[in-house]
Length: 129
Image (cartoon, rainbow, N blue to C red; front, side, top):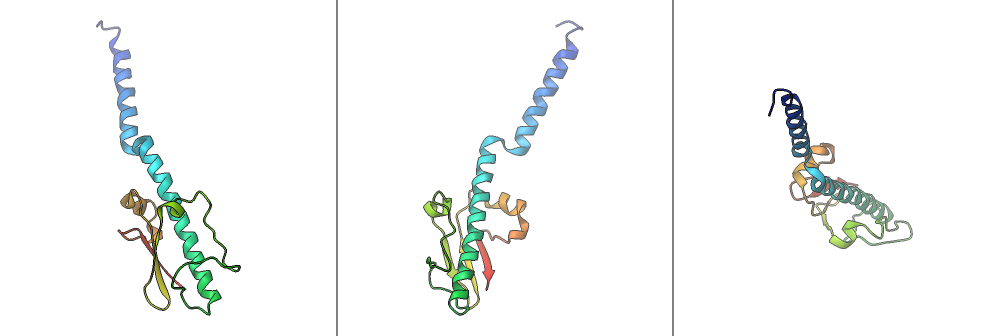
């Protein structure tokens, strides 16, 4: 190595370090795929909350025992919805509150990205009529 080459080598090492640091901070392509799927699950969960509230309004503001499809409250989940294949959980908490839960791949990261969604550590979103 000559004294003429050290700036090129230093810049190359610096550039590689920046790339590695960028991937480490963002998480790389796998983290991006997990984030995308968890965002989709959250969106589908919101649709199920709307659907539950619709069914309750249709039934005189009474929460349903299970989520069904009616003419007034059609199924909002797309055919390729993750929650359609993975499943979700619906719980009545009391007469006017309920929870809908899903299995998220990285719930901690999702809670940090979307703190206003109020997802608990079990992946449940609480809602009211």
